[in-house]
Image (tube, rainbow, N blue to C red; front, side):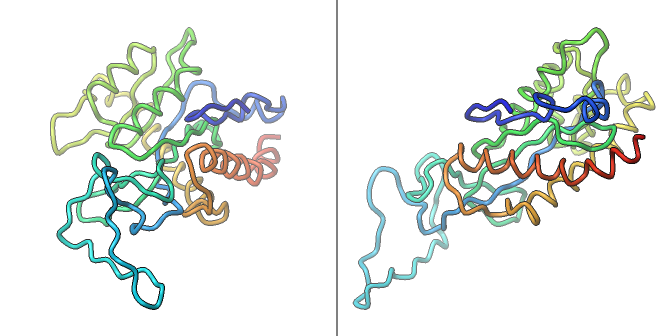
Length: 247
């Protein structure tokens, strides 16, 4: 498997011929999932100076009340895992120190063909998606990429088009969508929308069975490698059944 700081691997690099025949080369889906960092919120402190209350007489750290305090990644960092970022997955949800794990799935059998892990940020999912689909985009026939409405941004959709990738992205109906009827009218768009939801099955296995809900590791590289290994293990669990069905 290939490796770098954010692009940790693809199952196609060393795929056996029987496995490679299972993989779709034209239709893919992408998504990201929150990976909670092995660091407590108490470790998230100002970068320009100490913010420690005096220790209690018993030697224990004094309880800290963060209510009303303004904390952000621009002014604070975790002393336990500096790579972890404060991230809120949605409005009204609790902010956590976390990473984002990204996966590219082929749509025929739902196997993971590429993964990467990045610090958590609002743009990380779209940037990672472009990096993962790029090796598959250099084909005479356009490939498709399914994604949820979080990827419905004009710059992302336009970049896919320049790569000869059809953006089968769910429309964000709360504003003007970057995906128009020229894309949504085709039956393949509806098929991509159905198939893309299968990636949640992989994330569920990776986080529960694969131990990636909150791995006991620190740093982007270590957590990233663990995420890739968990994705590879998910594929291996699925392969015996898939190979029988494909006979």
